[in-house]
Length: 176
Ligand SMILES: [Zn+2]
Image 1 (cartoon, rainbow, N blue to C red):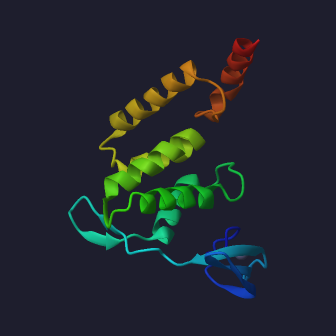
Image 2: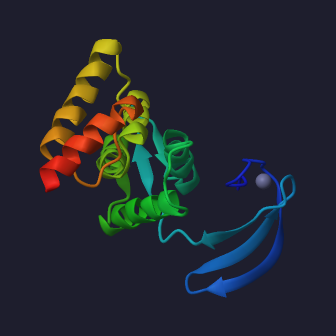
């Protein structure tokens, strides 16, 4: 488990206790000294993900989390947002009650949530996941987002930081 503050891979366990169906561990980063908490849990059943090339791979919460982390890097999201997102997706996957799930199903679940959370993170994730062929594809996705934002301005962070004042102003005007 990498340190959430400096990404250093090693930490020491300060405290460890049972918490319902998981083990809660208080850790301290061996590099920057920050303290954080991890939860170790039993996977209810083996769940396999079928990749686009038909390869079968065991579902990995860590892998999912690290993909989402990369997309959300340096975005102003509240602490715990990414873990919560992964928890939600994991719960939904197990709730499906299937042993095999297409990777596209998992990817769509992530996209759907990131879109509501943060456009930049969404675009970053989409560009890896959808493998945008060129800048035109990317622009198309951004245009779609922008027109969605124009019709539904509340609650989402602005996509383009430079445009924030103008967008913010127009939002305020609309709300009055
Ligand atoms: Zn650290």
